[in-house]
Length: 344
Ligand code: FE
Image (tube, rainbow, N blue to C red; front, side, top):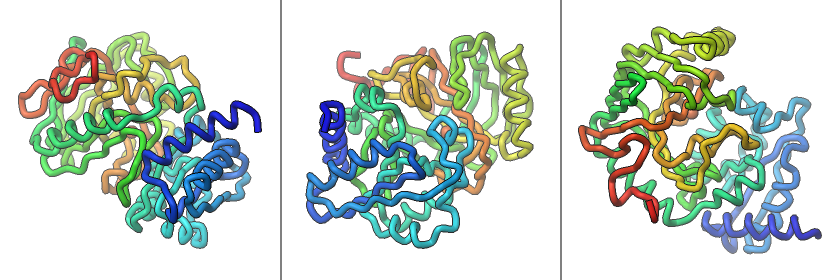
């Protein structure tokens, strides 16, 4: 075993410990084809070292995709219709998802059976740099309690954004990078939270500014893109070349549900970088401290029925976000003392 492998196993063991893995726990590591085989082997080894019962569930596939490809085609996978594999996954205490089941019906079903799930598909350097902490979890959960108590989320920016989401009683997704709670999903790395407006109850204008980020494109905007939103749907997308390219991207799915406004929240990971020049699927900009993460497309992770494969995450900098008129993020800085990162 080389040093790199030994280091990776040690890091994965630390992660599994945060996830509460110990003796007698059933850990299933899910992969497709040859994708991330090195991660699978290291997770299996780390889980065994912790005394868990481990299972290597590898789906054969002709069409195994990298995480970068998969993130643009979420929803349907090699697991769809595989009853034997589904039974194994639903029987697990913890599923390590190395094939990216995000926004799939299968993921929802596995969680409902009580298995907790951890997605880990980012390059090793990113997993290591953004390794989660209990301190981050505490902040994300305090933010969750504030969001759960709010009726309205509003955010603005200098470019002209002013949009309101009715969020009362809506489900909240937290991502802090590990999970020790039955039925709960998380993604390593993380550090943000999100909710969804009540059906049709988001209206206003979102203007992304130069330097804001388009995901899954992994692209930084050169000019503004303005979205007019009425009753939970994008009515128009205006701007220069970036807006035209985005209109074409969405139109290429030929799916009216792609224009639905999806989740909304803010980033809390002070170690995340504002960059599209990193490998992987862009978790840095999603979790970036003080961002607002605006999103279009599917909502089935929140219990909704929109499973359009067109999923856009649109992290924005320098925004001001309020919950029922209480300032939470002001010009890209978290201002609530109990939500601020140490030293910020
Ligand atoms: Fe999203």
